[in-house]
Length: 317
Image (cartoon, rainbow, N blue to C red; front, side, top):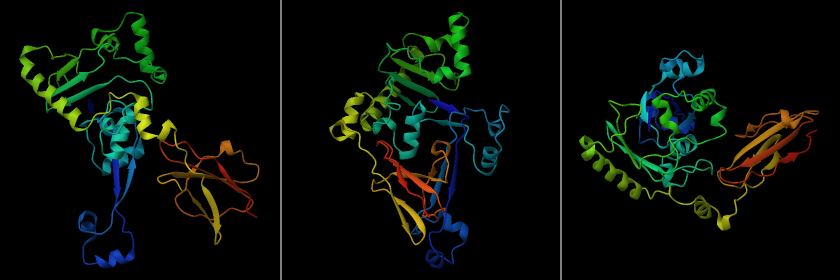
């Protein structure tokens, strides 16, 4: 799926881990330290995602909203206005970006355990091919979160009033073709399906084979039943639970640990009379000084696991 003018900002900060490494490379210019592949340390990467924005950003030529911070990032970095998403919906696409792997190769294509309709795509520079494994299913899915959007509400209103244009009505068709082929140069919005056009038969056969080979090469899990996938992830189909965090006080500093590898820890510092529900969680990253007469609440969570229990440390006097 082509994703034109969708803002992606990636800031990479390369930080020296310790003074000894600076000394070791003291004769190398600082700008070379960042890009030298032979250095014995890894850069720290901060990944910032502002999602579900489409192209409504000043840095991409739109004036609908004001976004000074994103504009600053864009002015100091690089904006990509023509690229391709690894998956047509948000959560699997994020999984692909985080892991560097196709979502349907790691069992992450089921969109938060919700229903979806299997399909694959392949493309070259100018043509896009799609294979729909469930052509009997409609393109439009009646999802609650989608119907909260004003544009979706307007489209539904127009559909009920039979006032959609011919192109708008395509989204509400009851079925899909088994194969789709679009000329992205002439038809960037993928309106005119060329799969049955004899002039594009050679290209159809070519991309059909490319898609077939790709599905085989990545060991596509998209057609597997979701229960089958879960049985592969969780022993006895039981979701594991993140271990409870451990709060300790050492040398007048509070530290929090969790024995579940890969878990993130959140905590709250509650002064007397504070409603815990009104206090936001902070992400634990390093020991901190306790606050007198305050309680500390901690929780741990690894993605894919159940959250831990909330652990409370009594007031520090």
